[in-house]
Length: 103
Image (cartoon, rainbow, N blue to C red; front, side, top):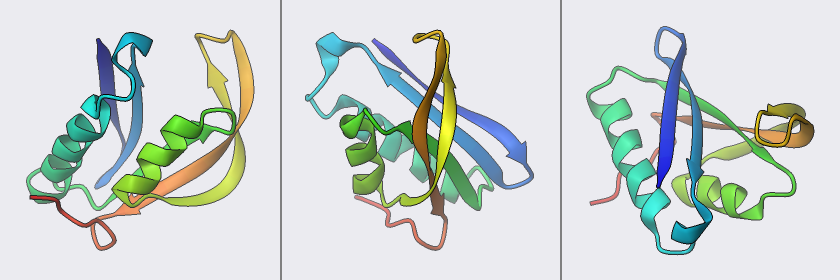
């Protein structure tokens, strides 16, 4: 169905990646799963900041990041195993202080 990865970059910092099969898009599944993962990270996981990236040609991913409170940063290039090449993207960051928990 999909996957969420939160790799440890440094103490208190994680790198977020996620993927959801096309058959499950537009059902709210990924945003709900990510809200749960972020809640754990910021309340129990000792995480202070989560970094991520999104391809410029993936508005769905950028929309999910925005809904979760991530701030867009600098342009970047992101390697994609699925595409077999690098593609233009944007960095995104969410800190514990900027995170808004959802009930």
